[in-house]
Image 1 (cartoon, rainbow, N blue to C red):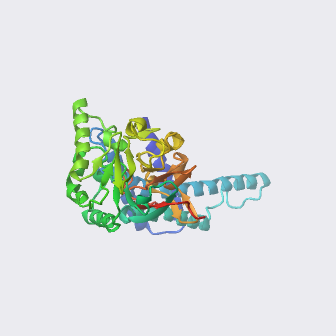
Image 2 (image 1 turned 90 degrees about the horizontal axis):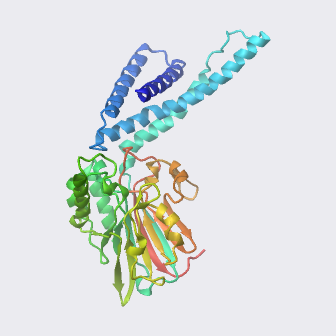
Image 3 (image 1 turned 45 degrees about the vertical axis):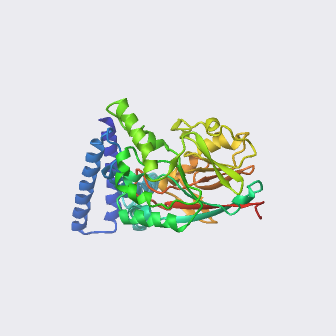
Length: 409
């Protein structure tokens, strides 16, 4: 009960400041009638959905839309409130100074300045427009990102080998079959030598993938195959199950999905890709995460491999590379991960800036990182979760080309 009171007090404060900002610029009574009716309806919807959230079901399109609406309405108002509250502090001390010096002519508090409200509303409009764009367009604005990596010890036969890497499908969040088919077509257009998927095929329930089996089965089978691993969401840890047996059956059903879409699921094991009497290893571990469980067993997955073998690791959570893989004496050349989604929010201008709040949690959160000739590539994710959109950090299909030799500076 206390948390609801705190939430309502917070919302009331935001609405008071929003009213003050609009009042300095707009005088129409009907505008404010419309504004408060729609705000009240939205607030009622948010409270109703949050109050009736069912932990036995987990995330649904309704809960995602609720979270999206929460961000859309209240992040802009929070920014607006911060700016106007800052002005109130200035007004307070200006009024206090006026009382002490007896120079004030407009009462204790000077009137709110119109240009400050204009600035506040202008700044607040930026996240509003961004979140709206993310919900309506950004979540399906797929980007193909290409990366060429050089390895002096890459077997000659695999010079020029291409990998299409996808991650974090979260099929339970999809709501546009045409857009998903477009993304699958993009994957096929890359015509890579292998396709690697690094986990989170659903949000929680295996049934979320049922409408999309045929779509994802449409990913072409390349000459070196399609391989996958599990992510943290694939274990069903984020809902309340009626029994342990039900939870385990869901887990088995999720593992079976990979076979249905013609992917070879690697569970702490590896496969060797052979060409011209040479080979490289694809090492797939179960989810290993600093925050979300340590089921992955790199040693078991690599059993029979040695330091000289060229190895590509598939591990969902990049914290595995940060804490374990990059330091392992067995020398893992390339690790492919996902998990972070780039928080689905940030700023990316290639060559200029790459920022997201998630970087304060994960050192490797999007794109390529290197340490002593060992690389990790963190895919920004194919789907979306929680917030039903993407702002600045777009859904990604990665194409990596392996080249023999040293990187040219």
